[in-house]
Image 1 (cartoon, rainbow, N blue to C red):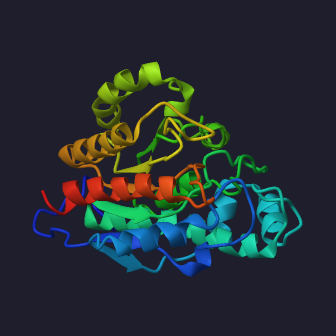
Image 2: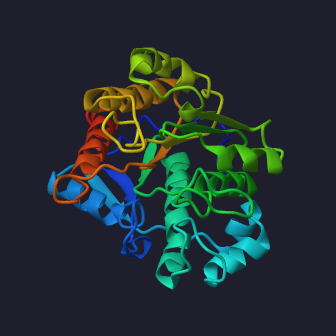
Length: 298
């Protein structure tokens, strides 16, 4: 059994950041959202830049994990290809990735609790998914599956969800209410308050306080979204440097508070002139650079 206090291990300095990735998380098909295919490209970019990461195999979320959060009929229908997923299709190729995408987030959270510091899940497509319906490229809510599973496993009794995706995490909020979990899940979604470039400085200045509001949690699940970028077609209000500053402040403050973090990629929809996701990769590269700076180099 894990000690329910904060888990920072001063004598176990990380040499590489644990990243939970498997090709089984990846589906390749045409969609406005790149989230199903993004994990492979993001991990390849981090490796190309020789960032100090250690690839770890995620354990897939089990049927029981998924049904702990979502309607059993919904889970079964999605996985069988009988109910449309968050992309609006019933492709079995997509359904097969979902336990691994959610499992990456859950595996990262377990590892962050274990090492007391940090772990990464290069995935997205969570916060719009509700109890029995998908929405906005989200099918299963990996944030809530992770939260309910950690509590079920005795790894955490209080969890923070810090959602810095551009959009309101409506599915997460609905599931918190459905499971009557507001007493032990502290949820902040920036999409409920911030949308305009004129708000950027106020948002950045508020980040340390937002993180500190979760300092009594055993873990923070952090959505490091790329879609708040000012050039994102579904964004945005922050520049590239402001997003990098955002992430650095989150990591620095969480480390100072002694609260482990498991973070994911969340949304991002920019493309370059050739239709590639280079602008999104730059943002996720910067997030990882800030993570390395805080947890490896300091």
